Image: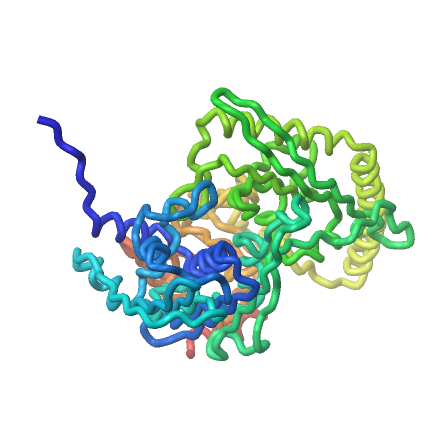
Length: 521
């Protein structure tokens, strides 16, 4: 007897919706859907509520008919073919809410769909239902409005973690708003995007406006020799190139475009946060950047100088669209080989070699000048009798050794020091070896997200900002509770068990005010 495998519908909906961990993915899905509906304009409004976030998405696209509406709510029932949303997973992120209302007008019908308590029902192992009502068609008034109430956004839409700057960065680096398709197709359609945040989230401006086009900074092929950093604004575009690639089982097309540039040129791109998380070589589908392939760049060339997008419609994405899942396939292997070959040609470009040489020469000159200036300052400080004030881990330990040399009995000696390790030093105190973390400020230990595992002693120059220390006492640290007992030269950390970590502050006299501020709060 033959039997067909069965699917637990509720579990599948719950798992797919849960896979979308970043609430900003609501924006990504909304923009892609609006673009696929031929919208010219889309507006997204987000307001923070006690139980979540209220989100409204408006577009002036073609609207949805009955079949499209089914695809919106169904799983694995998309009408798309090879584009990102062909699996029908994306809109399931909307299920993480208390209510979904879709009003959509097409040339076929005006439809209103309502789904109540989708997230609650899924977690109760119940498949949520939606009700559809239809009204007469209103010609020439197409478009879709989606209203989501109490979206379970976690931390993503909290005022401290969501700003217009962060959204602009996300739009250009993770959604169709950062598309490079227009560089390959003169008829590529541009869509205007508006995002409005409630004042309780970000009141720095009224709205964010952009389009579905990623703009490169202007080229500047020659160095600015009048500048201290002559290569900083140098920039070269590498024109859009289409490459037909054969692989075992078929052919595919790569669309490659990009730039190489200095820091000032890269700063003109819509970046937010560390450049190391944004630049390099991006693999894309639908010209939406998905995952980086920085190993395609020769190890002799830092990826930070590069920004290239390699688009291929034959890469397959994970359910949440955050990564590529067919990396073992022949098409992916050939894609990476071709990308590496293309970028090896960029690295051999005489202009690129000149750019690196210009940077290198300027860096050598700056280092020599800074070295002379530093030595001059250090000598003047010694001659004036000023004490050394440490600025890094090495100088903190140097200060400790100086203090030991002036004491009748050396209390602590440094036996081993690795500044890049989590436990920076092994010291000898009273004849016993102790594991020590070393920082300029005590607060640095927390800013570096270092644990207290295997740490017996923290050596620092100063305690740091008392407000920061009090905040860790209030909110905890790495899942545990912490109490600063600076009057006893230590802290108590309680996770699985309770540990007392001794603190040796080398500048205790000047830190007495800080110590009292923390203790007396």
